[in-house]
Length: 135
Image (cartoon, rainbow, N blue to C red; front, side):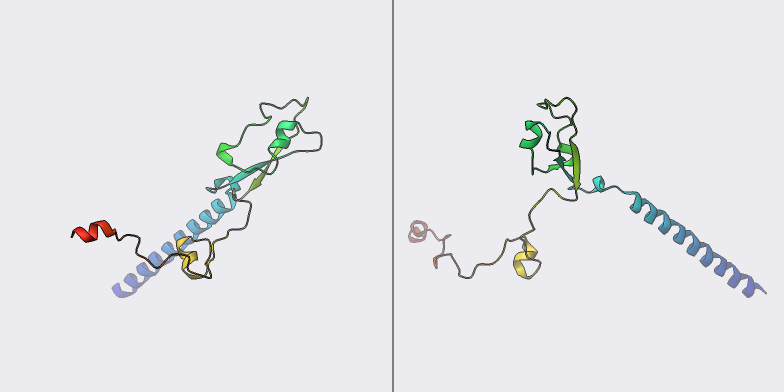
């Protein structure tokens, strides 16, 4: 009888832990879904404007700003009667493709590629001939 009660208690505890963990994972997934793109560390914006935009907005064409460093709209030099500029959102401030290779040693250390030929000379740069002669 005591063994049956002990097994039942353990089963209830396991069931309770399972339900509790399952509920918390749902809360996490809901919060992840509600995250906006601005939550990323490198979220960037660029200024989106129409053909009637002011010169200040046109000068900013193609530039991306980290979202916390973006200029306020309307721009200080805006001379339009009604500013229609908006922000276009981007995941990253970088525009061009990342040049780092995910393959090989250069990709692991953040290099920008490999060279076909070794460009260093065959001499030891650290060796100072004046110091070596005195020792």
